[in-house]
Structures are given as C-alpha cells and as structure tokens.
Image (cartoon, rainbow over all chains, first blue to last red; front, side, top):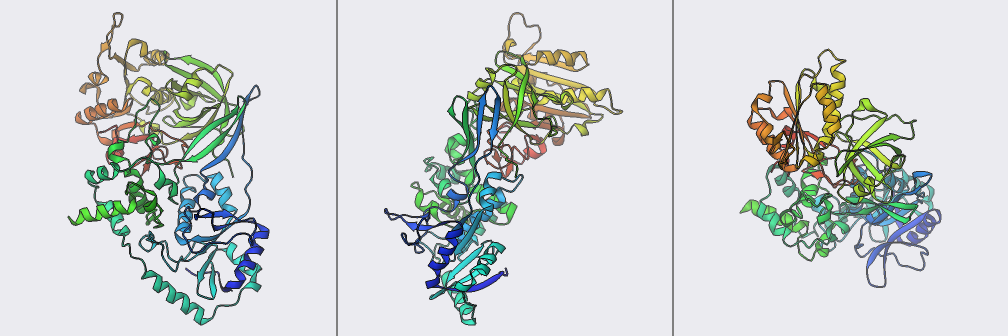
Amino acid sequence: MIDLRELILPKDQLLPFLRKLKKESRLIAPVQNNYGDTLFTEIDDLDAVKIDLCHQPQASLKPFLLPQQEILASYRSDNKGYRFYEPEEEEDTIYFGVRSCDLTAVLYTDLVFSQPVKDSSYYKRRNQSTIITIGCNQPFSNCFCEATESGPYLEYGYDLQLIDIGEAYFVSAGRSKGADILDKWSYFFRSVEKEDREKRYQLLLEVRGKFNKNIQVSHACRLLQEHEVEEQIWQQLSSRCYDCGGCAYVCPTCTCFSVDDTPIDSNKGLRLRSWDACTSAGFTRMTGGHNPVDRRQHALKRRFLHKLKFDFAEHGKPSCTGCGRCIDICFGGVDITSFIRLLVKGERA
Amino acid sequence: MKEIFIPDRAVIREILNENKQIKTFRLELLDKTHPFSFRPGQFLMLSVPHCGEAAISISSSPTALPLIDLSIRKAGKLTTAVHALQVGDEVGIRGPFGTFFPVANFHGRDLLFVAGGIGLAPLKGVIDVCLFQQELEENPVQQITLLYGSRTVADIAFSQAIEAWRQQGVDCQLTVDIDELDWQDHVGLVTDLLKPELLTKDTTALICGPPIMIRFVIAQLSEMGLSDTAILTTLERHMKCGMGLCGHCHLDGKLVCVDGPVFTYAALKNLHVMELN
C-alpha cells in the first residue's frame, strides 16, 4: 500500500506532539499501573504518567470500541406508553501506541459491524476515533502475527503508524485523518531521508526473523476448508474448557454480544449490550432449556471454526490476529494455537 | 445513523387465547409514517417492558396489515410477562427479519403443511396469504393440506383459524399424542398422517415444529420421493439482535437470523443442524 504522507518524528518531539493532540481530543495510550499491568488508559496528564511502549497491553482496544457493557438506549414504560431514547453522544478519541494485531482486529470489527446492517452504536464510537499504531520490533513471548499476516508492521488501516528506527519514529499516514494531523503539526517532523527508509526496511527484516512460535495458521485454515475435524480433537479440547469465557473476552476479534434490558425503577430502565461468548453454555440455550450445542463435545468448536474456517472462507483471512492473549489466559491450555497444533499434527499422523 | 436497537412502538389491539399456554397478540404500529411490510415466515424482535427482547415469528398474513399477529407460548420470563399484558398495552417491535417462505413460487403447486404445537405459528400466515391469492390469481396454489399434531386435545391451538381454513377448502387433519374420551379424530404422531397419496408431482412441503418432529417428517418426505428443494422448514434459535451481528444463531458459517430462519432441506443438509441429527 502507498501511504498518503511519510515523515520522521524525532523521539524528543513525541511528548510535545502528543500534548498538542491531547488538547483537542481524549487520549488513550498504554500505561503500566501499580500492579504492573499495562493497559490502555485514558490520560489526564501526560507528565504524570509514563506511556509504556515496552510491554504488550493486556487488553486490546476492544473494551473502548465495543465496551464490555454499554448503553444502547434508555426506555420509559408508564401511562404515556413504552418509549426508547437514544444514548449520549461520543467524544473524539485518539488511541496511541496500538499494536498491529489490535488495529487488524479493529478493521475486522469494522467489517463485522457494517454488514448486513451498520451497527450504529459501534460506528458512532469508531467514527470519532483516530488510531496511531506502533510497529513491533520485538515480538512478545506469545506473539504469532507473522502467521496471521497482521504484523509486525502494517501496510494499511491505521491513521498513523509509527516505527521506532532508533533516534526517531518513521511515521506513515495511511488514512486522511492521519495525513491531516501530520499537515497540521508538521513542525514536529522532518522529512524522510534515504537512510531512514533503509533503517526501517532493515528492522522489518530483523523482526521477522525473531518470531519462533511457528503456528501454521494459513495451513490450518486451508485444511479446515477441505476436511471435517476429527470428533476426538473437539472432545479433547472441550474436556479442558472450564467455561470461563476468558479467551473470548481478551480476544480482540470476539465480538459476539448479548442485549438485555435492566430496570432502573418500575417506570424506566436501560437497554444494555454486553460481551458474550460462544464458549458459554448459555450462549445458545433457548427458552425452555433446550441447547442445540452439546457442550461436552463442542464447547470450543464454534469459536475455532468461526475464526479459522468461516471467516477465512468469507474474507480470505482468519479472524485470529496472532496477539497471543488467549494463550496466557487459558488455564486449561486449550487456546487457538493448541487447536491448530492438534489439527496439523492429526493431518500428519 | 438510525439507532438499530431501538424498537418501534406497537399497541395490542386484540388478544386471542389459542390454548392454555398460547395467546395471539394482534398488534398495530403507532407510528404510521414509516411503511411496514413483511413476508410470511419472517420474524420480529419483540420488546416487553423490563424484559428485553425475544425473536417471535409473525403468525398473520401481510394481507391483514396494519394488524400484525404474534402467537406466543408462555415459556420464560419475557413470554410470561407478555401473557400478563392487556388490550391497549404497548410493546416494542423491530424488524421484520430473516428469510421467508417463497409464496411467489407456489403458483400451481400443492402445499402440504406439517406442524406441531406452536410450530403452526410461522406457517399460518402462508396459508392465509395463499387462500387470499387463490381468489385473485390466474394460476393459484392448488390443494392445501395441513397435518397438525398436538400433545393433548387441550393443547390444540389456532382452532379458530383451522375452522376458517376448513370452510375455505383446506384439508386439515389433526392428531393428538394422547387419547382422550371425547376425541373422535386421529391419535398418534403427525408422521402417521403422512401418507404417500398426499404427495403429488407438484407438492411443496412446509414444516415447523419441535426439532425431533422436523427430523422425522423430513426423513419420511424424503423417503417418499419429495425433492430436497421442495421441502421447506423454519428453525428456532436463541437470538439477541435479529440482524446478523450478535453471533448467537451462528450455524456452520450461516446465521439463522439472516440466512434463515426459512431454509430448504437442500440448504440445511450441508449444515450440522440438530433438527436433522
């Protein structure tokens, strides 16, 4: 892909640049908290916190763009009838320090929530967002984005992408929102020299060599198009699923949700959307108790097939972005990489 | 942008007691500025104050608009709350959603409806619209047959509609699972009524009922030689949005709310569906 603009941001200009951005909009960036967890956090005072670009944020942008619980509408039910009201407006928000895998997940979510109908609540928030990513020069321990083609650097989809080339960041604008920012704050930047470009290319080659997990994602996707998965694999995985939903909650592309109404008092209440997960028993259970999914056998089937079989068939890409978060969260050890390993091993046997 | 989770206001104009567990709610939209239309087989998301939403099939024909019937069995929290509502009370509706029975393709065909219990609800509008068109069209639907199974005599629903259909020439055959003293008609499963002589070369079958009934009826029709594309059924799944977003009704790469709920047997055959296994 061709970027709209390319510029160099000297590292000592980063904070002044962010200060300018923060004046005009809400700023969200990874910050390490007192417990040592790095999480995307709204920044009130740039001088009071340290933006952490050394650790992988433990959660993706999902909690911001598709909150764990959000108000879709409020309602009143009284002697004047039963009426619904629109939720409040959203603020302009800049997300800084987003990893390639997580931006890829946002692009996937954009797609999911644009068809067959446009999800108004999601898009209100998304349209107000500007995303500034940072390419990864060192994969984290569970990363396999090279296998899902969602990193370590991106070629499109970001508003701005920063690549750390040592003394400075190589900055590319992939969308007009990003280009507008560069135009507006051009005095923080210098133009790109031949050496900058070479440095960036060299770093990309180096980081590609640093991935060592060797998860055969595309091979698994193709196998799934042609073959049924052995029942024994599903059973083996499902027997170690404890129905905690952790994998789906940390997954940046798990977007399934529930909608429920919660009364505030006898006359009014809220219509809430919350995260839901196909790994939970209640996900498919119908009124009266019947469940079309046999949990003991198929607790994880839908999740893995959706990401690797059906999304691959529909979009030409799996909806796993290789962020590796489900690997640490699953205490049964039945994350997506263990499924891929079993599948590929079964084929060789 | 239109808020997609905000329903339109509808008022209950009439309530019919179909049996002890099933009531039909005859609704009318309050806001007439947006045109509303639907096709038989489609469903609505029904909002009930403080209870949230549930997917409910429309049980009337578009010819009855602006009135819209929802036939609801009392089963959970929301449906229990609906059953407590009175004429004049308001509910919310979103939709219509999903695929429909292709009534336009039924010209000149014989229709065989097979239903169990509340499963007659999504088929009812098809029968009504076909009867309505019989009088108007040059090449209308030919013979209409309904095989309808209920657990007990008291469970028989839609008696009023069945009586009206009989008067209009529909061959309505009823059966109950459990025999009772005053019952003069057939006793046994609905599949007992499924005789080869009911099928013609122009038969299309429309099936809805409990999953196990759907399975056996499809198997029997298939064995009797009905083609996979002439067998239509409609599925019920847990749904939260009705619009292909929430993921609950995902079925082997399809979404029951968008790609269904009405499927041909030819389409269902390739999916892992509990109704067939």
